[in-house]
Amino acid sequence: MSIVLYEVRDRVAIITLNRPDQRNAQNPPLLQELDQAFDRANDDDAVRVIVLRAAGKHFSAGHDISPEVLTYEPWKSMFDDVERTGLLKMYNWEKKHFLGYARKWRDLPKPTIASVQGACIAAGLMLVWPMDLIVAADNARFSDPVVRMGCGGVEYHGHTWELGARKAKELLFTAGFIDAQEAHRLGMVNRVVPLDELESATLALASQIAQMHPHPLQMAKRAVNQTLDAMGQYNALQAVFDVHSLGHANAWATCGQATIAGLAEMVPAKPDPSAA
Ligand code: ZN
Image (tube, rainbow, N blue to C red; front, side, top):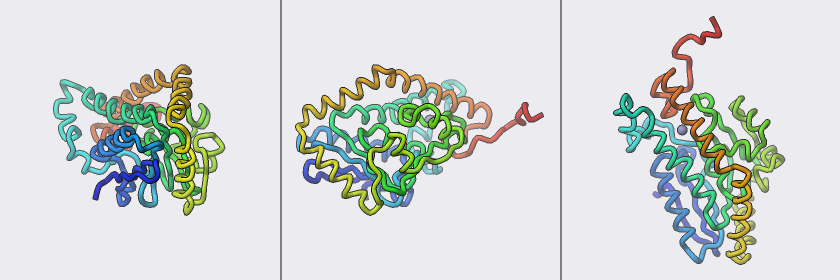
């Protein structure tokens, strides 16, 4: 069974994350298949709108941080030569596959809609924020707890843009959750619907948009995205990615390799000097 499903229904491409037993945790093959599915939808002239959804109870638990991930290249050999190359291999891999994919999907010419239920955690946000519209089930909840792993947020810093500065800080500082209603109030999601209406509401919105001519739709999307970039979003995303990477480096230096793959929470390796 494929870990990313793809179908086209009435001019709408439906891409489904399909690792429900792993809460749609994102491993390298899933990200690659997802990118291929977005390309396929974008290249198909019969597709007007792209929906991203997830099988099972939860949208995504974030990056797969099970030990299995360390069996995939390049993670398997990423740190073999770390004394010589430092964390540069990881930096480049994350830049391409985490920040780079999210940014690429954000700028796909066709309209995209995320359809979200249950938990959407850490890198789960990096799938929904780059989409143009978000429809949330009433049980959806959003969190970025990676401060616990030593970073100031996931690789794609949508937080401040999506939530405003104060809520972004609260979310990061507390590693807490924002529920669907609050996300709607903050403007992060477009619509909140009962869980059992999530699919029908998402597809109704998609088919409404699919009635429009594709050329002005593409221009409308570009108008908004270019405005965000003129406000500095592109440069801010690049800059904050480097802040994120400094977090990894600092966690490695103080707590060891396990924090890098997310296999351990940030714990003081040495006594906190301020506690003395
Ligand atoms: Zn990272």
